[in-house]
Length: 412
Image 1 (cartoon, rainbow, N blue to C red):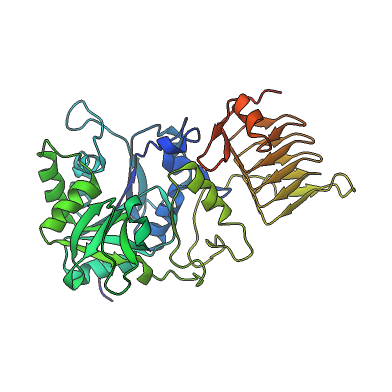
Image 2 (image 1 turned 45 degrees about the horizontal axis):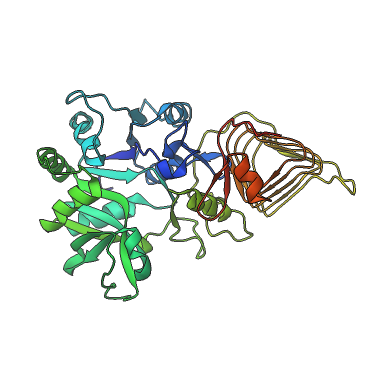
């Protein structure tokens, strides 16, 4: 049997997540709950672990307490085999300053690489919802002989201005890296598509170390992995592209194969949650061959009570977590996190309710995201009248989703 390459995973989890406010008021973006029982970071970590990359450093910075606690309680690996998932905060190792960009985060933590001595380093973002086998990407990287391989997602040319675009040349090398271009040529085999960078990279170790050191000396650099490090290596002819469409995860269906979402805005976060609830979901959580791991607390099963004409506990086309009680309420097309209670004659539709939300009797919640611990008073209407919601001071997404922050008090 061939020896497995020695790989270190580095997950960039310092995202402040300003566009997800108020969900990021008390936590960083990777720690935001998603899909009922998960945190956003669980998807990146699960991909690495399922791919048998079992030594992972998570680089944190902003409001990291919630994320640190989640990883400490959930992602406990075997010390006997020297496997680990560890959070690494900004430590001012190179002076009295925080991380000044994703490349600087790695530069300030080169000691991790010196200690581990890996042959290759997987640098993955922590902010996306997807499934991917990183082993297949590593194999493509080794075969290419490149210094770095960048995962590319095929997107319509019309959406190119939203992404960093990888323009492929010959032999799989990246010819140009363009940040949010207004106009770009299509792919040779699909003229109406372009490669968008997914923010996932596989580096040969020496190449990454040399690149971040050179970048650190450049006073004009923004110290960004995509805009600076990848651009530098593209210009040197050392960067290859990996087509995400070729990645085949065990157990994936034709419908959810190739799914990837950047949940960086309130609307994209809400839409990605809604992707989970159909009969044949666009993103299928129920894949035992490639599970998404998380910490499951000791909670009782979900319960649905009352079957009277005016108070019937039901949930349709919804994801219902452990500890939820639908007590004579009606839940439709929604995601309910652990401990949510929907009381008599309440209605919850097209919404995402995080842990411990209480929906009072006769209350209505439509097209909303409600963070942990919020109590919706009896008879209250949310998402019914924009004027009423604005008068209460609620946040609105660009598409009109009502968002209520953690532990906020809703006025009667």
